[in-house]
Image 1 (tube, rainbow, N blue to C red):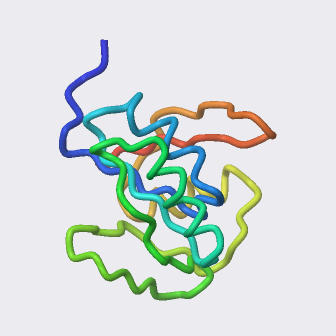
Image 2 (cartoon, one colour):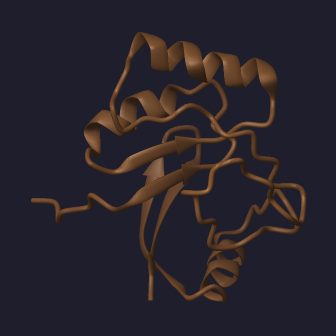
Length: 124
């Protein structure tokens, strides 16, 4: 049984075509799923996925370039906890070290297809 997570938001970095959001958002309600993508073609793909598989907790993609040292997001409700100055980060230890500097702790590592990981952090 999952704990109530109504105020939780997931910011998906570099969402690609959008297939993750349409799968996870309905499965993880009431968590709000916020995809992000810098590529306009992929933003269009995300919107197409969302139009075909709508979910009330899945939002349109944010244009977010994580390679910039300061992130500009046109969404006042989104509070980004930290900024990455170098990307990509290939070592899990590097990600954890950066996030811990912002008072988050690693709660869970979930293996995903294609050699990816989902990292679950909690604010402390």
